Length: 197
Image 1 (cartoon, rainbow, N blue to C red):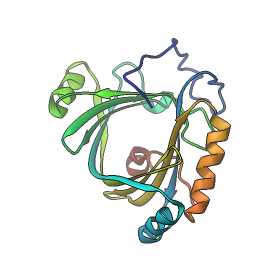
Image 2: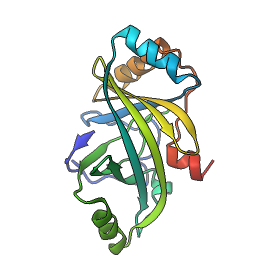
Image 3: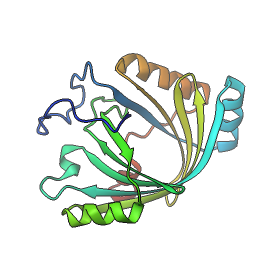
């Protein structure tokens, strides 16, 4: 993700969400989500391939909708996340891949969670929904692998990498999923799965 960055160009939101749009030169967050039936097995395989455990954290996400355009239609997202005692705000652009969740992402620290939430509401943003999860985070060959225990949805594995070479990274992510015995994929966000399934 591009932490604290600014959009490098004005985006045409009428077409930016179409899968396969060219984003060469843009740094993308590229991610796949997998259903996980046996987290113990996945953890053992992570150890076998040499993945390093980073941390366990509690995450609370609140998603917001824009007052003048529907993020559901434009395939964008604005998320306020509380991670343990810290707070981050993230903008996610439209997905640009047919197989993964590859998209431009901008994130920065946001100070106090409740204060930032109230600022957004005062500006006219509305809450779209919330997600709570416990996340075990691992690092492997420049990728971040997370085992997510999502309240009301179940257990999932997310594999993520940041870069410009979308096709190469996508192949790497799916290869990593195969090493972990993960074969069932989900392209929807947790928000979509919870509220719009």
